[in-house]
Length: 164
Image 1: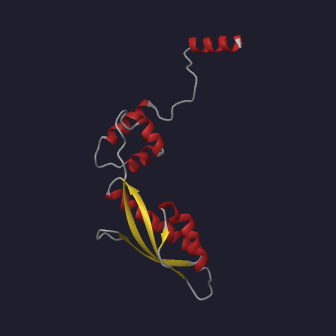
Image 2 (image 1 turned 90 degrees about the horizontal axis):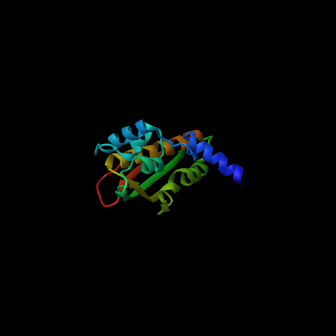
Image 3 (image 1 turned 45 degrees about the vertical axis):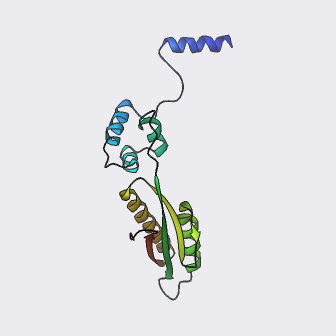
């Protein structure tokens, strides 16, 4: 125990503080804070620019003492149809199950009918919501394409006239 304490004291005397290195440099933190001060920038776009996760953003860049902006939520109605590309392919059911498990489960999916779902999105602003919806549609299309199927989808925000 004494040798350990002596070693730690010697390391501190040399300027070593111990612990894990910080994820971001002071320059990156300054860049992140300047980007965060722009009201047109979303947290998602800042995280992509700095190549960090959301928790890292809130740990290092979000103003201390101020609560982080609370995300808005909205309900979206999804009509989804999965079809085979040709008469020799029989994978519609498998594709639909994969899409439900991989893509839709993240959004608190509630199945209304065989082709209809209700999803809940959390977002910062309208651009963030649009990006999330477009990404979801692209991901569902890619899942269907992997199994030689295609999708038809229509999304409508409940309570408004917005649709994708």
